[in-house]
Every structure is written in C-alpha cells, then in structure tokens.
Image 1 (cartoon, one colour):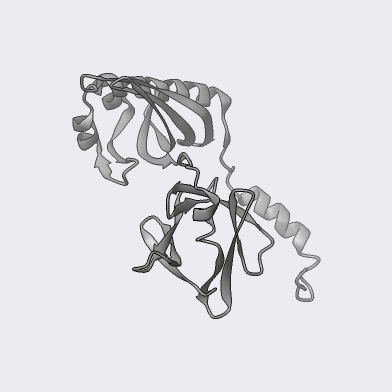
Image 2 (cartoon, rainbow, N blue to C red; image 1 turned 120 degrees about the horizontal axis):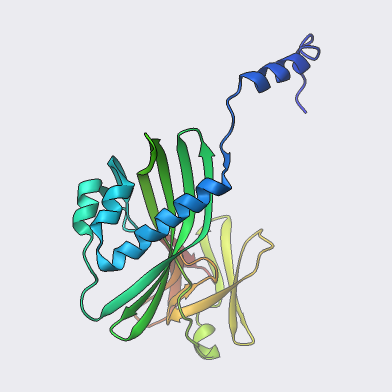
Length: 249
C-alpha cells in the first residue's frame, strides 16, 4: 500500500463521505426497461429479413450513427436505404440473446448477441454478432442514438494431416535473438510453446501450411517454404498483418 502524507489519515473518512454524497449515481441494471428495449430490439431484428424500414425509422434517432460488422459507418438515412428484403433463395431469422442493459438517467446502454440463422439456397449458415446499442430518452420515447456491431468469429473446420507432413513443421523458430517458439509433433498432434511460457497450445491445420489455435480465430500461423519445399519459417497473421518468425533448427 502506498504511504499517505502525514495529516491525511484523519481526513480520509470525511473525504470518503463527501465523495459519496457528491458522486452521481452509477449506471445500473433496470430489469423493466431491459424487457421493454429487448422487445424493441427483437422487433428490429425481425424487420431485417423483410426489409421493414418503418420499424427502424421509428426506433432510430434522427442523428443516429450505425457501425456495421464491416466497420462501415452509416447515418440513419443510409441505414434505411440499405434495408431491403432478402433476395430469392435466401430466408432467415435473427434471435436476440444474452441481453444486458445498464440505465443511467436518460441514457441506456445495451449489449447482446444477434444469433442469425440463414438458409442460403438450401444450406444453413449460422452467424453470431455482438451488438452494443446506446438508447436515449427523447421526450417519452427511447431512441437509438448509436449502435455498433462486431462479428463473433468461430474456429474453422480443421483438416487432418499425416505425421510425415506435420513433422515438416517441427523445430525451433526465432523472432529475435532471445525470443523463440518451439513446435513439436506427438501422437498425430502438433503443439507449440513460446520460450519462457508454461502454456503449451495445440495447433490445428485449416489447410496445409495454415494453422490456427482453437479459441483464437483472429490469427493464423502460415508456414513459408523455400524453392525445394523445405519449411523456412512462419508468419503470425492477425487481421492481415504479419509477424515473421524464421526457422533456426
């Protein structure tokens, strides 16, 4: 614990009381409002597949900003213009799940999951999005003033590579002189461990030379080969950006 200057110790109890009195009430859950706004949110989700602009027009504030899963920023007018019924061959629905809301005065912040099921020309596609909405009380109506959507990534389906292929990746890799990563193969599995870390992780193949760590779908290890086909290193790729590791043994 840091030491306090002489004379402060006796003041602290009074200061704590003063801060408690002066501080505004913190945002807190509001179950009744959560039920109301979740119902509105589900109605918005139901309106997407059929392109019902009226539901969205009523819920959005005139100055609302909407950030979609592709990081595109849309005004209310742009969002409404983009709402059209699903084309022929596609049908789907969105279920609003894990709804949480905090309420403070005229502002309420909600976060939830849009669980989407899409029939894409006879094939089922399941996608989940994490959405955060900011609602504001305008007169007697709650309106969305901001919304941000992010795709929740899943691990890809792994493929099985034989031991002979996996052993091509085994060895020591170097980022800098004193930062190394070790890859080993045992019982048909490939595992990796960074020098100095107790954590041993399994590496699964997405395709040959491209591996992922289960539970970390944002990154890949992409192995590099020379003209003869020998593995020379790998790149850690995260959102399109590469960190290069060289194989040293």
